[in-house]
Image 1 (tube, rainbow, N blue to C red):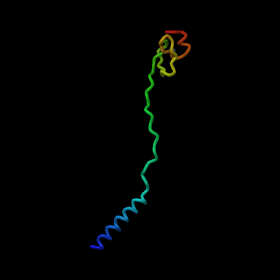
Image 2: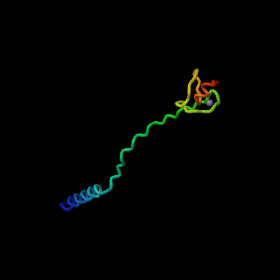
Image 3: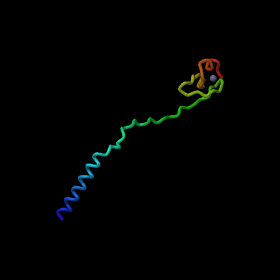
Image 4: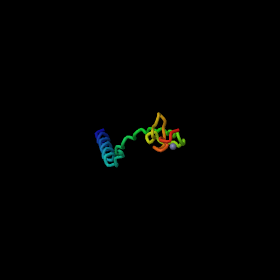
Length: 74
Ligand SMILES: [Zn+2]
């Protein structure tokens, strides 16, 4: 019975050593992906070309693809 306890202790010790030697599979913390908000594509009121909302030229509440089309109007 005494040897059984010793045997178990040795096995557990070996398992712990083996676990400690294994390469850690912990991945480096990855940057949390930013939620990508799809940008609205708005049609130019003059020519109908779709442009990202942030790049639209606004005039009279209408989106235009460029300053020139904003000047020309719809
Ligand atoms: Zn246009």
